[in-house]
Amino acid sequence: MFLTDAKLKTIPSKYLPEGFDISSWDEVKGYLEALCAEDISTPRALEALIEKYSDLLKAMNDELSWRYIHMTLAADDESKADAYNDYFANTYAPTEAYQFKIKELYNNSPAHNLLDADKYALLNQIITNDIELFRLENIPLQIQESELANKYGSIVSKMSAFFDGEERTPAQLAVYLKDTDRSKREEAWRLRMGLFEAHQTELNELYDSLRDVRGKLAANSGYDNYRDYKHKEMGRFSYTPEDIHRFHDAVERVVMPFVKELDDKRKEALELPVLRPWDTSVDLDGRKLKPFETTDEFISKSLIVLNKVNPDYAIQLEMMKNTNLLDLENRKGKAPGGYNTGLNNLASSFIFMNHVKQHNDVITLLHESGHAMHSAATGHIKIAQYLETPSEVAELASMTMELLTMDYWGEYYSSAEDLKKAKRDQLQGTLSFLPWCMIVDAFQQWVYLNPKHTTEERFAAYLGLHKRFAGNVDWSDLEHLRKLGWMMQLHIFEVPFYYIEYGMAQLGALSIYMNYRKDKAKALKQYQAFLDLGYSKPVREIYQTAGIEFDFSEARIRELVEFVKSELAEIEKI
Image (cartoon, rainbow, N blue to C red; front, side, top):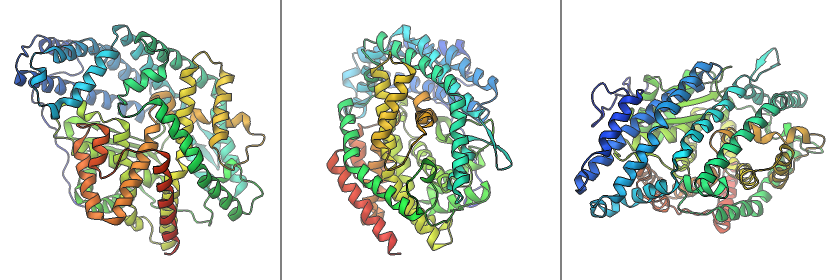
């Protein structure tokens, strides 16, 4: 125990009957039918309807989250995927028609215009958007899409190659990209890429199926393409696809020179004639950061770090640990990647990741802890839609936590040089990540604006984008592997278009960190106030609560690049 041995306590539902079986379609259906029959002619009755509806949504989302957790913990166990798919197809998705009716009742109620405008303005916008998009014929397509998307994790979870004396997953092979032995790095890189090459037909066929289903969803809702449909479906009220294209261009103009400069310094430091793909992760000074040896040590050090930022954050993470809501180690059969999924009835969340004892694992846990603190801060919110934060808001919480904890990373690194290196890598990474972010988004835009493309045309489109944003790395004789890079990004398969927000949030996090460097107490207070809002206000207002503007213009990016350069210069003086 560090601060507490307490476990999270279940928060009872205010409206769901005692013993209510959220997995039973009959019970869920009966509850929805009762809601549809309620008298909502007064403002209080209408508010009660939204709260009752929200209680059901929160419970269904929790059930879906737990089934997703079990599925990803054992991605090689088909029964877990079957359980998730069964609930989604036979209970969760069929509620859509009833939800549509409830939303129409809300919009058409005579009490609608009598509600508190400040409290309900955003909900009105969200519900109107949902009504405009809803099509009954899309429900079976959404079920099909969900089932297809879940196959990606199953495919990748079964990948492994024999290397350095034992079978290694793709995540475990990636560890060797930091090895100082260049030939070993190359062998690991080729083996890892070879796993995706061996499965490229299967992954291409899966993606073709997803593309086609998503195209039908868009067409049914009256859209010419899935890109525009998804932009509206994600509730992106604060910016347009054209704004995103300008973001791509700004990163190319402002960030790419910074990235190419880093590549040239890397080539010089490694004394290489050219950089190859397996040279981009190895530590330039030969130092291998070793932040922890065991999972218990990993968690303990992270608790100390969070406690120094805000004791409440450490208490929350420790209660999650005590409640078995952390699964952090990489192992065969486990789905790739990392995530945080909210659990409403605990006002908390579950953190899933695949640590391999690397510095990136520290960043991942702190990142996901930011999401977890967001979940904890919004436990007071009664309206379910205000808990479904758009990703440009959710990722601001997580990416900011990475930066706010940097002052305390000495808990992971007793060596001053190791700490210096970790901070340098983090700050450089805030910008060097952006080109990949642009590739992932621009690639998907091309895919869904050109839905009749062939596999080879898709590979060519990806290669063109990769060359645009790849920096000074030599890919000679590797085009057959280079074209597969998009297959390693699970978001492209599982959560389409959920990625550009990482770039927007990264700029926001740097802006908060800039404020933090000027006035720590004020920045931390603003950060907490931002967390408390959830999605109860529009995106721009939420960012302003955090003390910053929602701004990904070229001018702002240029300002933040100069800030990072100045911070890096300060680190070198240590």
